[in-house]
Length: 262
Image 1 (spheres, rainbow, N blue to C red):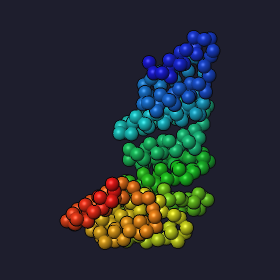
Image 2 (cartoon, one colour):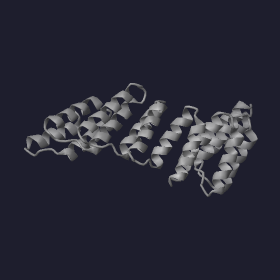
Image 3 (cartoon, rainbow, N blue to C red):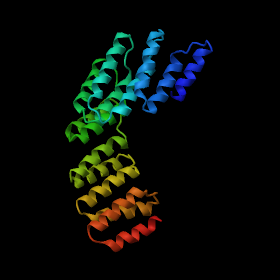
């Protein structure tokens, strides 16, 4: 038995009635440990004891199924089943509920299902936030639907939800993976003109894209620009450049860079 379950049983034996808050906290802890089967039993126990789960309980359950089900397409059906239970119990899904589900669907490339939920949010006057948009835009980019992702970026502006660098990183990533590095550079330049500061991850995307299309000199310029700026380059940045040098047979350059990592 999980430690949290033991705690719950200990409270029960002391004739103190566990409430929805206690159950929700324990369910959250067990979900993080991926003990979803035990969590379902706890949920059933709550219902039997006439302790009504609240929106936090349901969001925690949905998130738990996402944690263990990211590689299983069938988990989406289970999530929708939970939404059905919530409706019957009179609990209305909130923004967090939709964010969790949209993110979960996108991670297993069920983007159409994510889009359906996104449209449902609009119909129910539940307004998406930046996190919702970022999850969906990332999912669309990963599935190759960049034109629709860009439409959502425009929609964010129209709805007063300014995109952030996380939003744009998804766009840049798919451009570089599609060998559209010039477009990525133009896109990045526009961001800087708008005072949106690139992150280290942004530069890693660009360096990787440049190396991928054989533009090692340009990749090196970006790398050296970051050094001059005093940026803290991470191991991944060095690894990209080392791999780029090796791919061109520049093993001396690769070893020199490797020695600087130590």
